[in-house]
Length: 103
Image 1: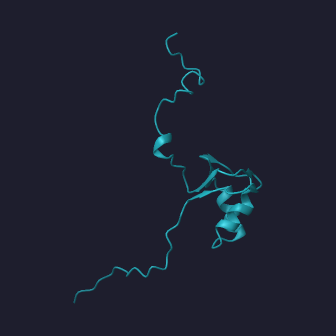
Image 2 (image 1 turned 180 degrees about the horizontal axis):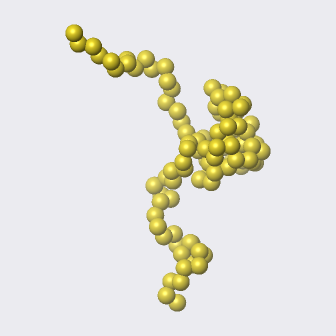
Image 3 (image 1 turned 60 degrees about the vertical axis):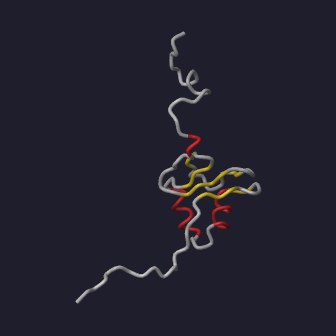
């Protein structure tokens, strides 16, 4: 007797887009509720409270944070920087953080 315990893929789960671009000036909570119709208001507030919402890479917990057009809102447990943002040294940061660069 050969039993296959794997579940067939029914396709009921939608692939989730975890990055959203802001098109107009709007408060964060209103933006999230409008763009996450499958989530309740309480669930969205919980996501905010648990630091799972990032605006341009910065965790935001304030529900009335004002979003500006062009900003990127990312959802997830931990922010993962796009490849272009990773790297140890940044031309603008080396001296700003108090590192003595040999001068």
